[in-house]
Amino acid sequence: MSRLDKNDEGAAPLERGRRRYQEKDFTKAISFFTEAVNMSTGHLLLTALDHRAAAYEKLKQYQPALKDAKRMLELKPECSKGYLRCGKILQFKGESALAMKIYERGLRKVKIGTDNDRTLLQSIFNKMRLAQDPGKSLDPLEYLPLELAEMICQNLTMRDRVICLAVSKSWKRLLESSHRLWTTLDTTNTRKPISQTSLRLYLKRSNYTLDRALITLKARFDAQKMTYLTKHCKKLRRLDVNGHGIIGDSLIASLPHAKSLNNLQVSRNCEISVFSAREALKICRETLVEVNFQRIKGSRSQPAGEWPRLEKLKTLTLRAEDEALLNFTQLVKATPNLQVVILNEWQFPQNGSILELWTQLEHLDLSNSYLLVLPKLPPTLKHLILKSNPHLQIAIPNEEDEIQYNLPLLETLDCWNSGLSGKDIISLTQQSVKLGNLKALSVGLRIAEADGKVEEEYPASESVKSLSLAHLLIWEKRVLEIVKLYPNLTRLDVSGTKITGVAVKEFVKRGIKWLKLNECQTISADAIEWARNQGVEVEFQFPSQNTSLKTFRDNSFTGGFWQ
Image (cartoon, rainbow, N blue to C red; front, side):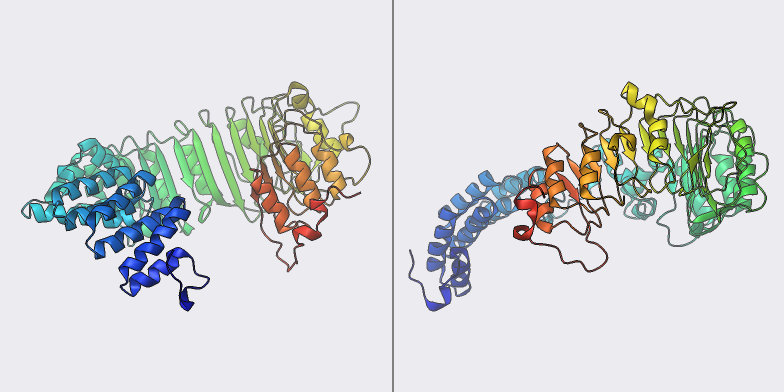
């Protein structure tokens, strides 16, 4: 072991070696690096070998340096460092051809994006290759199979593909000859309006086989451009309209030519009037299978007019702006074959609307829709989302008209922040629990009973895998009683509750693999870390207010359950 001076006291061998290397005392540096090699593993060993090889290089002792480099390759063949060091030593030895093979092997072994040194590896290889044959181009298209080049280009944005057209004649020839690269028109990354000429050239490159268009309002697609798009692209099946603003006239003017359109999407930031929405559906009523309007502007006092008959429609998403009134019953009658329905932020007239006419319905989302009374539901439902309806209740049956909720296929019930009572929840899930179909249950942020028999407030089920009790105003003991009703639970959300590390320990013991603990003020950071060390995926965010977390040693979590 090398003799230490005052500057080396308390320093690790690797750090001592670095100091000697900077002082150009390479012999002593090798001694310290050897000490580091003998006591290190993993990435530290790789670093120590790299440093020792560099010191050997300075002393022109290439054979031991090459031996360290080869050991680096054996230790971490997926890292660039070993190939860089080995190739550099071989170049010093005058074996450039062998160095080229080492660099080339490294480019095959080290995956793109895995470490920062791969770019340097590629750069050195390219320079050596160019030096060997200066007159030869390094255009990758000369070496890549056509199929692979197409796959790479498909991962480029539309804007980047257009830029690539100007790189070289060979690039332009390849890009324009592959129609599959141009079957999607995506203006998301455009920085200025798209001209009529640019649109025409783009569609020509696709051989007019475009099947999807993502149009942003900043691309300034007026009625003329939209009509040109739908008129010349007979295979257009999906149209997405995104961006901040209003869409209406240009969309309506273009849709009569979209004879194959089966999917129409208008984003959350893009407003469309209820009149334009109905008109768009009317024009494409023979072909539409999926419709998603995220921001419909309607009236609070007058319900939307008649909806067109849409026999082929399977998925419908309508999100209202400013609590517009919806003619729910007429909509149900106009769309008999729906399987997925998402109606958010609407006012529903409380006239006993009947959803049973949706005989194929599997997914129903009525979140944040100002519902007061839950209408009758079709027995085909698998997923029922009723969250953020704080005044929602189940209709009270009378002797003449008893309302029963027969949902034997129900897999998901989400009534977070709703007015449903525990008995209501049990009523909705009774049949699915009996048949073992219920898989996910979200019942948080409600007025819940703090005592009494827990099985009278929550539907016990062996089939439930995912449970959310987020923001329920109940104590930890009650939470534990509820969780025991679900012996096969793997995912649990208890955000905003009063649980402690005691409950966390019990959750882990019960086999839960995913825990969400956001805004839990009474959990220590050590309890969370302990759960993660047991292999549990924990999602945790600190409470918004300044809450001092307890330390592990002060928490009863380490000593067992509270008495």
